Structures are given as C-alpha cells and as structure tokens.
Image (cartoon, rainbow over all chains, first blue to last red; front, side, top):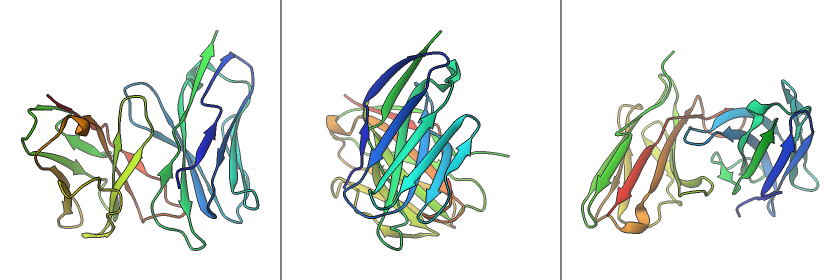
Length: 112
Length: 115
C-alpha cells in the first residue's frame, strides 16, 4: 500500500531542475507533498486533489495523473534551501481514506 | 499563532518500562495524527483521531501501543513494556479536518530511545 517514490536520492547543482515521482498501486484521492530538513519536522508544500489542477509553490510545482495513480513534483532552478527529504503522502480510495500513507522519501542535495 | 507541540522532546527509557508521549495540536484542529519515523526512514502512520474518536487504529504495531485524545485537544500515545525496536522519533500532526484538502501541521517530535 505504501507509495513508491523515485529516485531515492538526487544530487544537483544550484540552478538545476529535478523531478520526483510518487506512484501508487491503489486509486488515489489526494496526494500531499512535504519537505523535511535534517532534524526538523516535515513542512507542507502542496496538496493535489483528484480532479484538481496542477499546483505551484514558488518554483516548485506538482501534477497528479489519476489514470496512472501517480504524482510528480517539479523543482525548477533549484536553490540551496530546497535541500532536504521530500515525502509524498497518499490518501487512497475513491472517496478518500482520511489518512495519509507516506512514501519512503527522496533525499535531495543541492550543491553550490 | 502556536503550532503543534510535543513533549518530551527526548525520552530515554529502559526496556520493559512504559512511556507516555504527549501532543498538543493547533487550537480548532479536529483531526490529529500520530506517526513513527525510524532513523533515515519514512513516516509510518500509527493512528488518527477525529475529535476524541479514533476511526483508524490500523497502524498501531502491537497491543502494547495505545492512544487517546481528550476534550478534542490533547492526545497521549502510550507504549507499554517498551522494546528496543520501539526506538524512533514519534511525530504528531494536526489538521483542520481529516483527509482531503486539509494540510497537516507537524510537531517537532519526541525522540524515544529504549536501552
């Protein structure tokens, strides 16, 4: 039931772009994206709802493909502050299960 | 305004002892979630509350784990007869309503070490 995130880790230079994918074997109702810096609590980035539009937070955007049961997070012109571990949290079921099942995370390192 | 708070921030206990972890959600948030994060791992769902009721306890690892929420506010996660494999960071989150379009706000966590 746990969604699969890919890649597990990525290293970029500042200014480069990255894509993080989150795939589920079950029908998805919503997908939440969070970023966690080392030793800190996860921080909310955005939510994508079934039937909703692509979302954007600063230079980070995300899409939700209901047919593929997949969400992708796009980081454009990455900044040093984007470093951290990114988690997708999936809410499954046609009407939503009201709880999130999180992926294992994607560790993003941005170098100057 | 005040965010989600958790106490204690760190807890070291001996194997076999009971521990209680506390979570104070954001005022007005009806949904409260408990997660466990082992070192370098993802967030493992444990239980969630809607008000004082727990519609989904499916993530509790064993009957040694229990949780309650009182007054639609504070929640306590209790682990009885702790084992070394219980060592992890326990995170609490709250949201205005459960699921759907409601973002979860996380507390700083309680780091539990069982020796």
